[in-house]
Length: 371
Image 1 (cartoon, helix red, strand yellow):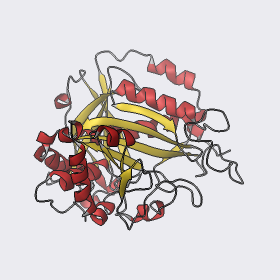
Image 2 (spheres, rainbow, N blue to C red):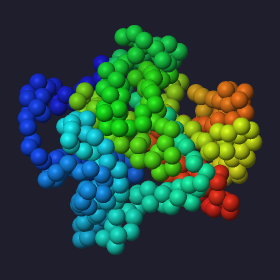
Image 3 (cartoon, rainbow, N blue to C red):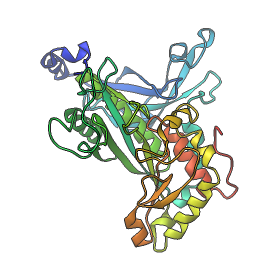
């Protein structure tokens, strides 16, 4: 079995004693932000004199950007700008989690702050009421980097019995999944559901539908909650798009997309128009669909293991080997949504949703950011 962290062996009953202590009228607020890698999340906590009623009541703060790969030692202070507030499922009410944008000394967005440009595009396409839902796949690992629950010196039985499975030998890590689900609900995340995935120790949760900028906000905080829950169990959740080489599924962030026109009668024609526009920007989208400029998807999008080929654009009804899947029910109803299966598990949802909205809805089909 994969190893677990020392912290998970702490006596949790002792922690519960302190968590139950009164904190008077004070409120703990944990500030969360994306670091300079574009993948990692950082956080720190401060005390406020009263419980904030909205995100506008939470003050700006700062941090040492030289320690998060976001600035130089000589000019290290970075601004934390609160943008979304959630309930804190770890220290509980009245305490809060707050997602922040990061600004540099000149108040311009930090290099990995893609929320600012995403919000600009979402404001431009607001009339379309664009909804997103993202299916976040991830894999549980031990602290030694070996998949959690896999034999230490070998491999489990081949893929087949693990997807949506039940049983000790098939559903590995369910306690973590269920605790994360509850934490999301408590926080106020729009979590839609969860299931065991094709590779053992691989799971998925879905967030949405969310309109516009909310998609990126909700998914980043849901990821934070996942990593934080995993701390308590002493394991690691990796968003690596291809955590295991060989005949094993990779991990994606399949993105479901729907505009108001697509959801109305005859909406299929608008879905097909969007797919046509996406086909003309395929490689530009690939470059922003993972955390390393498309390089991670070279390992994942091989045309095998329920993926399309990274070099080819394709679309089809109920086809999980296509770049874009139109669900069978949508094909029958002639309205609904489409699924972009290309984004990798470690993608930045701000970049993904911005690229899709820009390509599908802006008349001039501006160049996708980062391409």
